[in-house]
Length: 145
Image (cartoon, rainbow, N blue to C red; front, side, top):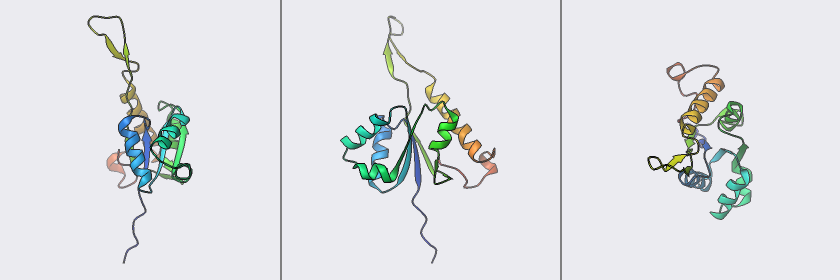
């Protein structure tokens, strides 16, 4: 009988947002190991604590990388656990709405290209971790994005 597959590992980007934080909470409650790249680690740990995730779970199952998603080296750190590329990537990134004095466009985003920039950085980091191999060149050697 084959041995059971190890539990998947998950990397989170934008983990303090509503959808991504909920997914992270569910992963941690299910016993999965995860990484989260965040600009403010205390914001994430406070959020997890407010949702009943004990500190010992955070310490044993969550690796927090403090950085900006535009930093490819930091993203590479967030995409690895125990020297392996994670199995799944969850992105909850998005710009924050800001008001401006305009009748035609009263609401804009603080960083309108953050999603595209972040995904380009994440994909570049995955490619670098895979040794420059892309998509069809590699079977089963990289995360589900």
